[in-house]
Image 1 (cartoon, rainbow, N blue to C red):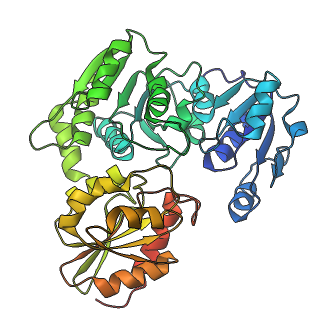
Image 2 (image 1 turned 90 degrees about the vertical axis):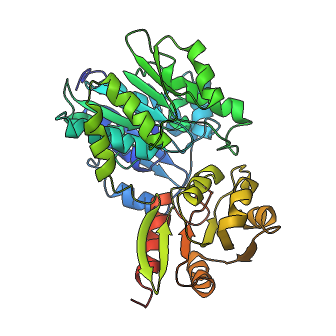
Length: 420
């Protein structure tokens, strides 16, 4: 690592005890910081995280936030799911305590070249494929971010000459100061997280932070076919490289080829990686076929645009299971294609009434109280040759702690179904 003594002796508060918060706490403790951690939840998830702390010296506050716990700190680390309006962040700013994201923390320590990928849809796939292409080219590459392993959990293993393929959300980009990837990638932009941002312009502003510190020694990869993304070139100081439509390739693959060309990786090698790629968990993941019905786990879909992508990539008649926590989405976006492909929809969670209202003009819609009930209703509605698609279009937090837990629950229900 670089700057290993930067945090030694500093008093640091981490807000949010998810995976990023846990990784940040263990890393800072190992670097000699005095670590405090606060989360307003006291539940199974936070208690499980508590058991994974590597030091008893880390002071933890669960089930509440108190101002005294914030006072006197040298630095505050904010976890991705925590809003800038959360009380500890408001108090920290009133006390003039610097606030940075977990991404910034890892960046300060990271000796490797960082390739950072953001966008509304496709981040996980592109991040994974770039990592695989680097590894196939003989490079030592780490794949990090919302994709599974937090950046902070891997940075201790990194050396100069290594690469990081980093999936990064708008939330993580809100609180960066010096973060400066060698290559930044913006895939696309559509309505998302409007429960957090007042409008799509504010959401885009957060995304643009990915290239705000880049200079002429860096690269910014933009989607030429998205007019809003293409227009960002005029704001960039980095060298701009576009990806665009190409026969036989989807937009994710086009973006990866733009990055691998910058890195000097042979195109045929990248195409071989695409051919061998089996997909990522929770994104159009085939779980099982039961009595001629395919069950697809697309739990990573948290927007109508992501579900629309799934509909475009499935050919069978569909029974759709959707719903979760509302975040300002326009569910009618799936209606035009959905009326041709979706034979019935089953809606769950806090957003079920809004989704039902958006779809019921052209699609049969039923409600369910639980995911278990939704799967049971889907079995009744599906016939041999159909597909049951679990593609929620919403956040998971009304019923599950994250999209992974939600996807695993769906897979467990399907795996336990009777039938060959």
